[in-house]
Length: 175
Image (cartoon, rainbow, N blue to C red; front, side, top):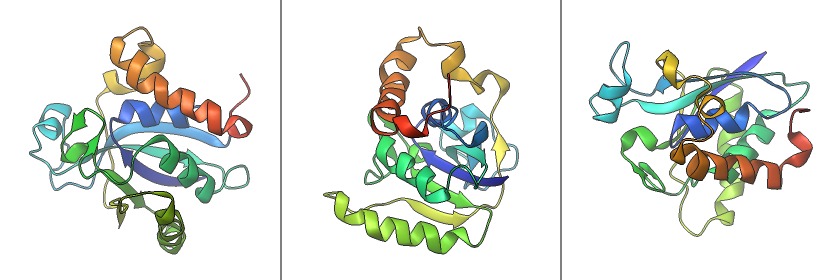
């Protein structure tokens, strides 16, 4: 199994999307890219830690490539807005890719160069080696699946899951 850590707004959205992708075995919501040890949700939201809300994705490269994961990632979030996704505003909502496998750096940078023409504004996605991943608090795990009737889940998270189904039906896990 390989891993990659992605940040693109609220981690509930990314978790819900990537849980449904064939070849992904595990998705864990958490924090990366900051300076504080053992960050918690409140300190991350107060922008005291420099961490982004992220998901750690464990995947089988024989089933899904990192390029396919990036294609999904760049479709379901806006990589051109700095520290923001829709109404979620703050440094913790930045677009970010943290890689643990050094071979992915060139793949990621090449992918972003190729995708840059698809957007009207420049891509501002932060790309860095993964320093540390901190799992989020347990109540954030599997959030969408456990709270589908909550308004944020219906409107925001649900729209990203719908976009996944619309554009990537061939990459969905069997129901």
